[in-house]
Image (cartoon, rainbow, N blue to C red; front, side):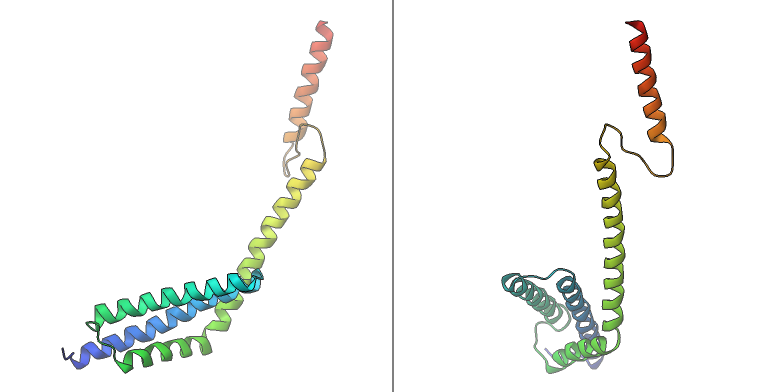
Length: 152
């Protein structure tokens, strides 16, 4: 089936967008690899997963926009979209994602440190930051103990 020029142009633009989206997907894997070093088998599994998803997206592009016809301009659009993304936005996205990952990591590390300090303090009560919850409970507990001792 012969596609109109406008349909081919639309498919080319979608292929460029898909190439850029595949670049973003690739950057997500790059960030994951920087954050946690993986063994060779895990890296290979991630690569296979990336290419399976990419192949599925390309197949959907071919079947939905181009009636399953394989055309060179679609591959050119994919490559062009990926190259433009990788040369322009990639380093900014990777830096942003690493910054967010570091911020989230520090946030949870601080929360974990506070919890560890509270657990190391021993006893039944964990002091909470920013209020007198610990003191109120301790006073109430001591008052109950004193009144129980007075009743005996």
